Each structure stands twice: as C-alpha cells, then as structure tokens.
Figure 1 (cartoon, one colour):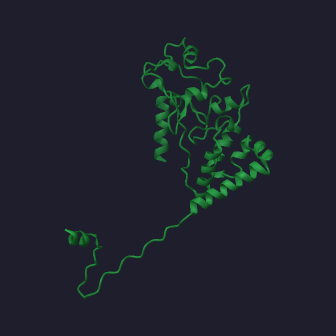
Figure 2 (spheres, rainbow, N blue to C red):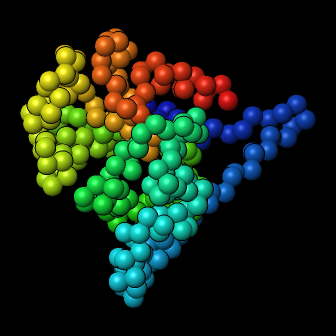
Length: 242
C-alpha cells in the first residue's frame, strides 16, 4: 500500500512520440501582475491630493455639474447636457412636450445638482475612476434601479428611502403619504393592486417617464410629457433595430 501511494503521488511523465521524443509543453502565458492595483493606487493618490492640498477647490468643483464630464467626456457628456439643457439621453426622444425629471429637480426650490442624488462615497468614486481609466465600463450606462421595498438590496438603490428623504418631497415623506397624493385617481399607481412597484418602473430621470399601468389599463392617467407603456416598448424595439 505504501509503494502504491507513493507511485500515485508522482507526476505522470509525458508520453513518447513515434520518433522517441517527448512533446513540447506550450509556452505559459505571463500574467500581468499589479496592473489594476497600480491604477487603483494612482487614482487614489489623485483623490488624496485633491482632498488634501486642493480640498477646497475639489469640494467646490465636485458640486458643479460641469465637473462630472470635465474628464470622463464620453460616458458623462449626455447626462451633463441633459441636466443643463433639459434634453433626454435617449436619442429617440428628441421632441419632449414637458420637462423631464432632471429638469424639475434642477428648477425646484432646492435647486438640486448632480451630487445631490449621485452622492457616492470615496470608495465608489475610486472604483469608477479606475474603471474609466481601464475602459472597464459599459456605455451607454445601464439605468440605475430604484427598488421600492425595504430593506436596501445589495447593489441597488432603495426608492422609498432615497426619493422620499426629508425635505425633498414635502407633500409625501413616506409610502403611506405617497399613496394619498394620487388617491383621487381611479388608478392610483402609488397604491397598485400589484403591490409596491419599483420607483423606476415609471419614474425616469434623464429621459421621459413611463405610465406603466397603461399596459393593462387604457384609462390610466398619463402625465403630460410621459410615455404610455406601448410607446415605450415601441422605442425599445426601434433602439434594438438600429
């Protein structure tokens, strides 16, 4: 048993070919070590310099929407233009009949800016900076999901606690108060028979919002400038065909 175990533990020798030689092993690929780490350290160092020596400048510029695409031109340009000009990031939505959500937030009493909602911590900013430098991102960006239910899910925003923060929507700062806002409507989307819907099922920020209820209820009230479910699906098919 001892000899058998020792024999099995030995690595197998390469089989001889017909000419008596042994086959050559393919050259091993060299792994690039530390590239991601070096980039992450570089991005981190840049943030530390900004936060340290130029902390005041960074704090001021970081709240300026133009800062968002000062460096990251390709992915951020459409969103900054959307904020400044009230245009949709959806190229199929060129004729808007009402202000989109980002404009309403910008022109509200609070005069909100990008970082009011996109208030990610330093760890997220470092990761996104690294992804941009390495090209490790998807463009156009996928829509952020504002989940309605509690608790906050990993990798997802929570719509109820995020959108109904104190001081933002004074007419409704809880789900129960939100149901009352449209209680006079025959079809109350905030009190759906399908349960609590994800906020982003209807509410979009940088493009036209969608009245999701119209996929079944033709009599559901569609706010000015919004799309019906059928119109949204038509746009999605046109986008896929391009």
